[in-house]
Image (cartoon, rainbow, N blue to C red; front, side):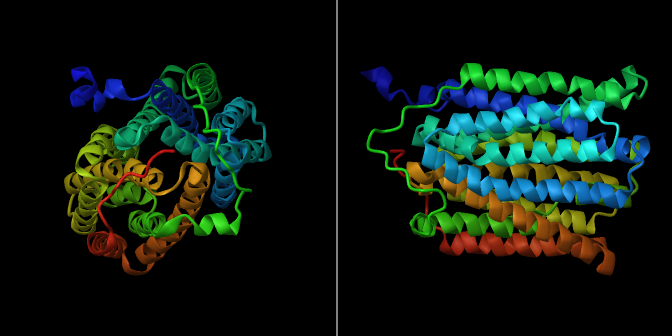
Length: 405
């Protein structure tokens, strides 16, 4: 009987379900594959295939827009069908199938098709995968579970560009040959998903509603919409990491070392996501979220005023820590605030709003930079961060976990 109440075992990494570890490794492998390609794709499009920079932007914009649209429908479909793994597998499978198209591409059109299918796959898998993690995990381990997946995902995002740099050196800058390497982790991610992720049995009383029925969206409740609003304002404050790269370049970092900016951010992100999730399981979500948003305010202020590259790197490090403290946490908060049968829909709606706000934030950040200079972009980020922080402190109630049934 004493072992049943042994809390240290319950809250450790070993207590997390095998399926959560497997989904984290799936994310790691697919992110490694995708980021290996994405770190070289603009150079490949412009230097090898002769695309204009405008065309590169158009390809990325259309692909990301499709991912946003698909996310909301895939989450709702997973609620309706009661099969999270099948849709998750479809999404990862579509992404894996596209990887050989990049080294084989003889035209910009082929790359466009590959990116289009890849982003649709990302849109399909995101919400069902997060809902599946929530289904697999007891309420007292949700923060740790989402944090672990986010950490492993970010490890892949760091490993991909590093692998690309090493491979380019070993393969005499042959981008097509390097792209073939990305096929291996993509296939491995699908194998892990098929072999090691078991979907839990749904309760026999489950009564799935038709996808995207307005009445069901309305039942998501105030607590859920507060999380969505927090995530949206936070995204306005954060904008694209591309602006961190531009900030470092503006501070004098040589082009050859600019990718190191994202490595610093991603390492801080990966190192903090799991501890932050586990901390939120013990101390409550609100205190960790406040700490994470506070870090973003400080990071934006430093990046706005930094006179040299070392302070820019310090701001980038804090930015990464903020990501680790907030991104997995917001996913756990969604799982806390919605009934099991609507988790897919809830994650889809959240991802859609966050994606739209990311697009708006990046456009706004670019406009401010062009019109008023670099300082204005990060000052605006600090203001939006502070607004989000005030909203959380004043209006959010302490988290009480919703039963997972």
